[in-house]
Picture 1: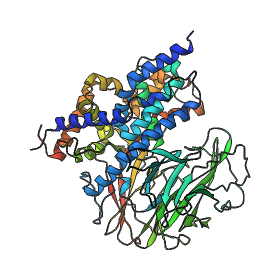
Picture 2: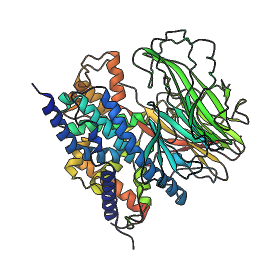
Picture 3: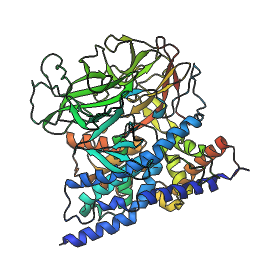
Picture 4: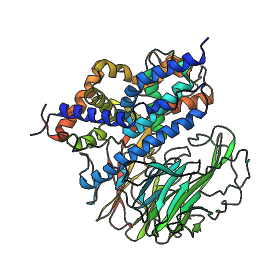
Length: 155
Length: 466
């Protein structure tokens, strides 16, 4: 039988390990602020249902789906808002890149942001989204192609 | 010389990560540390954490976003859009003129910024509290809180600060026949006395006297799952030269979501208010703006949370908020419904209703320019939901695949479903839960309604960006 302290410790360790990944994934899908809130929502759910969530094979994927759906329900807006570019801190990044990322279809944006902004591996993205690597590759190519065309940049 | 795309994406990702880590290194965990057992209080802890984080985001993302949108008005490329007028196409809620919207869709998503009267300090709200900074946003402390959520804050012309608190009365077991006529809770900061006081608003009479709440089918959120409660909420903004509170209330309960009606309260100073108990329109307002010397109300023929097909969009105008005129527009350019459409990425969508009754989004985006006004309704199609005929996890997987949601089918599907306490065969409650969870919907594009004078309106269809 689990005692209180080990349960708490186990959850904290899990949450510390998964929080940044979950936040990045949900930010890529829902936008920066809504992604953050959805992450808190998903972890709150995980805490309350820790016995079940903690025993899952892919709890991160489960919490991503849960956070994504609850985040969508919480805000009926279809618009996604990402953190704007600070031209002083990252002058080599075109400010309109953010708007173009926001305008991508959800799956393309999620894949492009996770792969190229947060530098996840193809396997990590595929596991999270429950898609094959070839599908991930296709979404990435489409998204990058669209961004290049709109920004007028080279390969 | 332009930097290549992947370098820009990587740089942006690093910046995004550093930014988020800096403002919330592990704060999301703070609320959970030291908890002896799970319980409902986690919500309170989560909200406290989220509020603090969101306030910071509001300050450092929201305001730069507003400034950015002003300095860089170029909209994202939409190859197939056709907007008859030379007005800025709405790309974000921030493009809207002074407006008030229904409480479920607060325009500023829970925050608003004003500058205090005489000392130059800045105040902002995040759900639950009003925060204040005396050093241009460098540091913040809670200035005013009442232990209940704040919906919105607005600054009156005389410098008074008006905070609308979420007064959801949640009176249990009202029962059919009860009168529901609560008001939003208004707190006013007086710029002279520098004190807060509660302002009593006049209660609107319940239309027809008493509620006649009856169970209805196909109820969506925010109806409660059990019990019966009154619900009242309000949102406020400066519209034209006065503060307008749009109140929205209803009786809700399991299978009941009835009696919704909207009222307006208006004021010049936040102290003296006039009630407009019923708007006298055949519909439901989601946005109210002041434009071209008239009020323009945007909404639909009925509230979005009442099921039975998508609400039809409506536009009304008024010079005094009491007498309204509907302004019709032609929807024949909208693709016909009741058939299968191919959506982006090869997904098929289904329109459940006739041609002029696509499932329109309830939250239009409103853009106002020098030459006119542009309102964009995003169109979504909802597939027919799953039902009790699905008798196994394999059947659910097949249904999801047929619905174009194959990515939701994986070995953990059974675990996911059972995690919600759902077993086969499904009962009605479980069907509702699953339909809600899988959120089966696809964007079908949008249509934009534009006008140069607020009287004549033209609708044009805009397919989804491929």
